[in-house]
Length: 135
Image 1 (cartoon, rainbow, N blue to C red):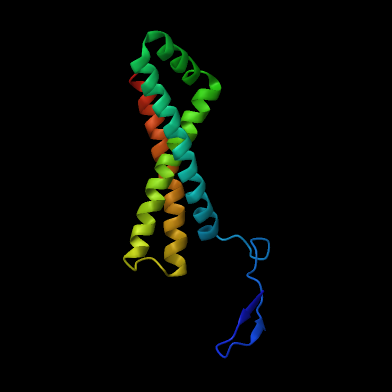
Image 2 (cartoon, helix red, strand yellow):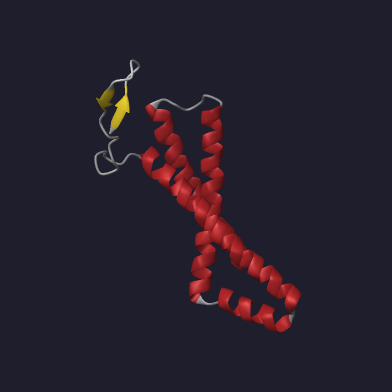
């Protein structure tokens, strides 16, 4: 990359390393997953809007959308949306702690990363277990 120094001369600067250069760390992986979960939440919210619109449109449309939600694919998508929701929540709380200046030591950010993974898994499974229990 070419840039200019403070005196205006052209200077060749190194390019930033790519993901292939660095060994993946928990913070890197969780940061990428945080972004992916945000996109998944947006997509899942579109399904929620379709479901609500179908409910407002009448029983025939609602049965169509509800029928899709009951299929294996529909259930997998809903479970993925649940995981994305809890992951984004717990990862966001982790980011809020960082915004307050907490958890920047290696042991702390590693522990908080695994805490996000564990609480996401537990909350997602618990939500679906309770959801099936109250059916």
